[in-house]
Amino acid sequence: MSKVSEKLGLIFGDRQLRGRILFTLGLLALTQLFAIIPIPGIDAARLQSLFAGSEFLNLLNIFSGGGLSNLSIIMLGVGPYITGSIIMQLLTVMSPKLKAMYQEEGEAGRKRFAQYSRLLTVPLAIVQGYAFIKLLQGQGVLGALPLGVLATDILIIVAGSLLLVWVGELITEFGIGNGVSLIIFAGIVSRLPRGASQLALTFTQADIPIYLVGLVVALVVIFGVVVVTEAERPIPITYAKQVRGGKSYGGLSTYLPLRLNQAGVIPIIFALSILLFPQMIFQLLAKSSVAVLASASTFALNLLANQIFYTSAYFVFVVLFTYFYTAVTFDPDQISENLQKSGAFIPGVRPGLSTADYISRVLTRLTLVGALFLGVIAILPLVLRALTGIQSLAIGGTALLIVVSVVIDLVKKVDAQLSAREY
Image 1 (cartoon, rainbow, N blue to C red):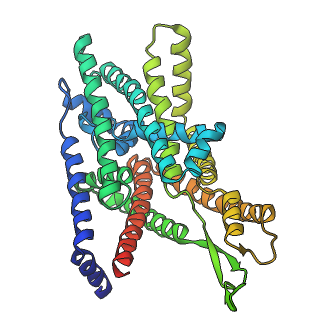
Image 2: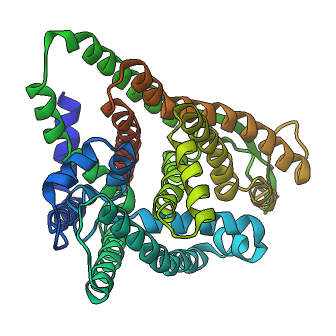
Image 3: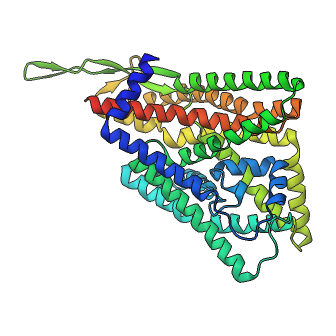
């Protein structure tokens, strides 16, 4: 406890770090204010009943920072931006130019890459906004809208999504932590008091075993995420000795840390986006006057509604995105080249291609463990929901995984700021 209080004293004793934290908290509070400003013409009772029975909408509400449950001006949240980022990441596999921009052109290249993701956010937000409005009209939450009002609502929704992305980037640049992740985190945390009060009001003695199971699962998820996130595989590195002017340089030994889970929580967010975005489009097309589109969309929705198919697809997407994101962000060939240029080598491994192959083999084995862990943790709440029948477990598990990962990342960034202050 003394260490915690000591660290808090260091954090708030540092004027710059304190300013960053207060700036971040202020913008997160602002996003929650945006989340309670609704678009006009909403039937609140129908909206509440719609969310009570829809896991799809509740998962989307996570990405909106809690704004979707009120049909607020930020109802789309950062979802379109995340989808745009996924598309851009996928394009790096097909386009060597984009891959070089992301990996080799440094900070300037990554800024251009992010700008393309922002530009892609606009058409995606327009499509998602229109699909949402039509979906809600079909459920009776929104009434019939004239063309001018419909266009205005879509414009407001798109502007709200872009505003949230801008706030997230302000947090990343001038605050502390990853802004987009923190917005999702704030949306999850803001729902905790309401969820706790509902559980307290509906509590009966018969629910005690189920609550205990939920508590045990939460503790296991927290422990597992922390362990896997912190786990590393050190690869020994030795720097060759060099003699200059009668003095010897180099000859030092260090290690290259390869994390067990290089991708963090990104595969979970990517997998959810890939599963949720098509559902939104299929819900819109299911009401199409074109018979082929309507029947195909209905079939796809029924397939996604199948719990076994949905769980299996979720697991596969998480595993695949873990490998994909690791491959995009960590290039063994570039690491090998950098080691060779600096006169470093792995003992027992030839520099160059052999070093790249060795790092790639180790990374592949590590990623397999991390990917399977993320996949199991992601589907575990869905399995528990199928066994217990409690819907909130499915959402709570995914939310818990995101919250724990974001908190770990935030703590690391705060520690890095404190270390920089000491230097």
